[in-house]
Length: 376
Ligand code: NAD
Image (cartoon, rainbow, N blue to C red; front, side, top):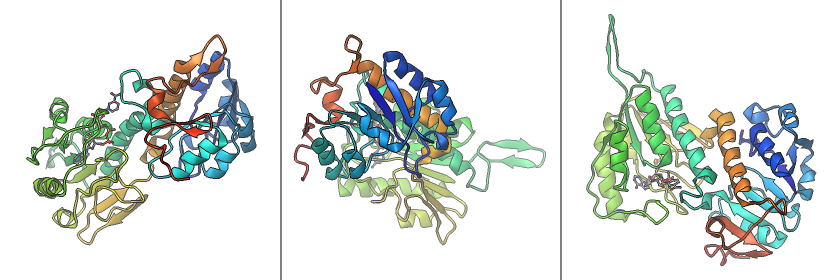
């Protein structure tokens, strides 16, 4: 089988395979083509891919591939170039676009959506959403540390004592936990809140304080994602968080709802009560909005009262090489898991417990029950 590693659009510095994973894929029996310059954003020169056994190829070589790896969703035009029967692995943002799902079905391509990877122990090693979220949480703390006009740890010097910076992390999933751990390591005082009750223990075990807000019954889905709150519950949550925000130097929001728009959690009034120089990082920012009123996707804005609000587009870009390494490992783990040694092929059984969760199209049809009604 031939595998093609696509170059990402210029806004994404990552790449879906690195020399280490290419060696693993070649060992399986795959022939690997890497699009020229695909590793540039992650500081991986073409020569390193060649040394690992891959060939450097022009973009149109994709049409010969049996397996395609990339990070970002392709365009409909890119899907049209794929070979019938090919297997395509990437993020697909499938809730945002029926068009892509239908294009994959029409092209006869088996499309795996990495966002839909089941949250099970077996699939954990293939879970790119988690591997990237964890780096995002880390990177958000570092970004905030260079934005605020102060240091994070307490420092006692002959010149005086500096108090630790105060952080508030809203949403304690994979990104939030890593943000807490990173801010704690740098010496900040950290508080955190999440609507899933199970999180409190994880927060305290990292040495942070869990902010208690009574918003009535909350919960999580079978996959571990938060359930949507009612408008009244969201109001209660915002009231409960307002005081904490006003005392914090940095607020990092990571609160997402799988397959739905992120809830608005930090309002104009809450921002107006924050001190000049404080910073909010909205990791849920998207072109459709995020957790923070006034955050702009891919931009940094400063409010009239001097609060910086950053809505990073792809914060993983700041640690692109490690982000690529983790993403590439997730994909190599997937291929190794489903590799059939006898036939030397990647086999797709739509009924397999992992594939039933993340395979959107197969054999010329939309097969995932969440998308079978995708508009043509
Ligand atoms: P996510 O990115 O969907 O959301 C981030 C966090 O925001 C979540 O913790 C969510 O509860 C929280 N949130 C949503 N609405 C909120 C609100 N109004 N206020 C405050 N917080 C709010 O979630 P995630 O990081 O992908 O992870 C969710 C859970 O799944 C975590 O417990 C994680 O450990 C678990 N998980 C399990 C596996 C596995 O078992 N293989 C893999 C990855 C994640």
